[in-house]
Length: 194
Image (tube, rainbow, N blue to C red; front, side):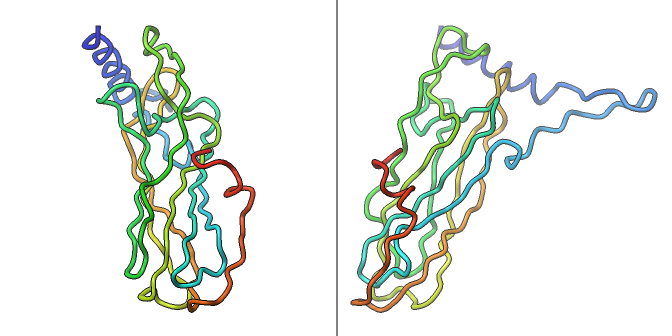
């Protein structure tokens, strides 16, 4: 059963890659071009403090809006061969993570390419959160923290190849003892993982 499910999923992915485009101007045929990540999702990054004092913990978030008609595998997909959604920061000197990123729980949904087994997916809007801190080695002033979002998106008939999207968190670091103002409460007041 598991093997049949994997073969059905693989067939759906192959169908997307192989299918041809519409005919244009006589006998000329164009290949179907898979949608770009920007056609599937929009992303925005946020931090919880502005500025961030050295020695202070703060939160960072990536908000993902998934376009209608698409979904992406959750961080804990239903099968091991499915690509999980992940967010990975590349922390500059002076920044550390306080634990692992926090991912929302996905929803179990059935799709035409997986009629017998629900898949754990994200749809609509999801927020991925991280706790970080800036220590006394963090450069004062504006800092950019690169973040990589990796996901595999699907529509109702097929899954696209996994992609990595580079994102940036913008942080302003100030000396220890200074006060940081809480910002973006609509993002960070929600329970972790939502």
